[in-house]
Image 1 (cartoon, rainbow, N blue to C red):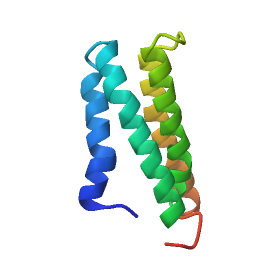
Image 2: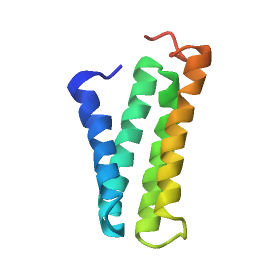
Image 3: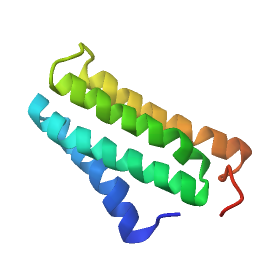
Length: 111
C-alpha cells in the first residue's frame, strides 16, 4: 500500500490540481484533469496489483476513463460537460469504497 509522501504525490496533489482547475476554463481543466486522472488511475492499478486493495481495482479504471473523457472533452470531440466528468469521478471514488466497508479492504491475500 502506498502511504506518506508517495500518496501525496500520487493522489492528493492531482486531486488538488483538479479541484483548483475546476474554477478555470477548459484549457486549465484539460491540462490538469487529463494528467491528474491518468496518474491516479495508473497508481491505483499498480496499487491494486501490488497490495490488492479492493477500491483500487475500481478507481484505477475509473480514473483512466476520467483521463480519456477529459482529453476528449478538452479537444471538443464529445459533448459531455466538465461537471459531469467531475461528478462521476467524485461519486465513483466514494462508491468504490463501499465494497471495502462491506467485505474488507483487500481482494487478494498479498497484504
